[in-house]
Length: 157
Ligand SMILES: Nc1nc2c(ncn2[C@@H]2O[C@H](COP(=O)(O)OP(=O)(O)O)[C@@H](O)[C@H]2O)c(=O)[nH]1
Ligand SMILES: [Mg+2]
Figure 1: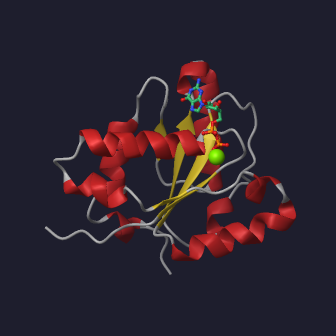
Figure 2: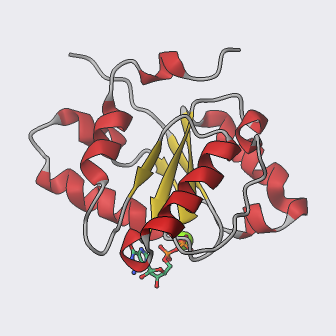
């Protein structure tokens, strides 16, 4: 089975948990060593500074950084109580786009539902709910990222 490395770019505001998410996935990679698929992810995650999203004049930098990516991951903290992602934001990239809700351990059900809704409105085709502290939600996320055919379901262009 041949897997082409997929480049994954994480976008989200400062403190949303992007770097922790990257680290967690790298750590999982050691655990799931037997599957080469997760290894494909390792080393191919592009973390981005929150300022790129928060400052309008820097948003162009995200578009440029994302040119090399295969999938866009919008990262939303579960208990943010708002979002930096405008509706339809994913259309900026014309790439497959998914959402990750982080820090579910800090949020109640309603907050998690709101966070999911923000990501869906931003254009995420699928949303995963995770906690890097509790280690929850990663199996589904990793499975999705390592599917052979997910690039086929991305935005048509
Ligand atoms: N409770 C909780 N805190 C988290 C989680 N993930 C990250 N954090 C904390 O949130 C803060 C910001 O995380 P970081 O990964 O640096 O965010 P970044 O700015 O998006 O890269 C740090 O203090 C982390 O320890 C999580 O799943 N649960
Ligand atoms: Mg960071």
